[in-house]
Image (cartoon, chains in turn blue, green):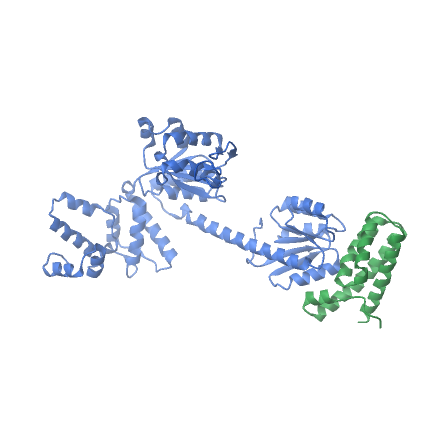
Length: 458
Length: 112
């Protein structure tokens, strides 16, 4: 519905336009049996049209009014509020008129007879259910939009501000966006921020990870197919381009696409039409395209792995996400952002990050980039006590620097084991049971090593 | 008193037996329908069949709602004849039926 004022979901404001006093009173009485129906009665088409600014949820319109015909009122309503449902109630069953009215956008055509009150009741209830679903959809959309409201990251550092500026430029236009960056730098997050803040947000964001789809299936996945197009095509299926029509298609890991398919992709981007496999029919698609890759596409072009013409087509607005290790100033900023969101989502007490913990975060190399930082912070928030995240709460469980260092030290297997266990004990509050479980070794082994002073416990 | 020519079962069902509502509907019927009948007769007398058809159309749901069964079909025929512009003997006979039955209904409803 086009209404901007949101009433409680079940409440329905109904305009009843009926010049027959008796019929109007009977209908109003019947509808008012449900206290969620608010019925306002008008005796003429004009008086109803004058009050449309009150934003009814639906109109019950008598076809034969003294001033205007039902179809005239319907047309006027639809020209100002196209989404407002109008139920025509007529004293006469006239199929041709009914068809004309439905073509003009009437929601239903009900004949005044002994069953009319039930039919009106049902139609209103259906509208109420539809409104509930629409409200729910709007709520979910708002929730998703706010989730990707990147402006909530305050006091951003220079590199991040630069990225935000580019995102803002992308939001305002329909330009193709190419995002590059190492794994975990937040390429998909940028794609989502662009989509959910752009004019395309009411249609879906469809993500396709090119690297995750077997090569032989990618073409049908992207373009769809007709029934019988190939063995196994038992029914028609639309492709991701069509699915994203009116919205955004995010092609992740575009650098993994085969050359033969790149030619087809180029044609679609140039001509904005797709052809399903097994069909000659061209289908127009209005889809914003965002691509991402961890590869250097220019180098791939030079190697002959990526079409040059497609490269320039896709380049559009390039957004480069530098690895987190090169954005030291942002580590704490992002850590605080992820922490705040985690605290809000889980409704736990507010947490701060101690100075020592901040130093530990800043000095780590973050091979898994932002994704890893988020995981580390979320785990730390769970482990933290007394409202503070301390050094001990930060577990870099991805094979990180500390273990890398072990290799360079030229130790024996026994030493490796001892160091590994010590590392886990240190990061798990010397909890022997937990570490034994994590490393899949017996508790008694750990206790024996402790007894033999092979392990250090503070 | 003669048998009732009307039947309030529809109103009874609609209101769940709410007598106040039924009384209000009867009062509204008695307030509007005699005037509509008068206009219908005038339209026929002046051969204004467009108005005749339109008024028949308006009276029709009232007759249905008050269960005045004997003229449920007649009022529909009058509407069609009026819209077809046929001010003939058939129309006059049916109009006489409607007038007589409605007048009985008005009287009975006033005295209920």
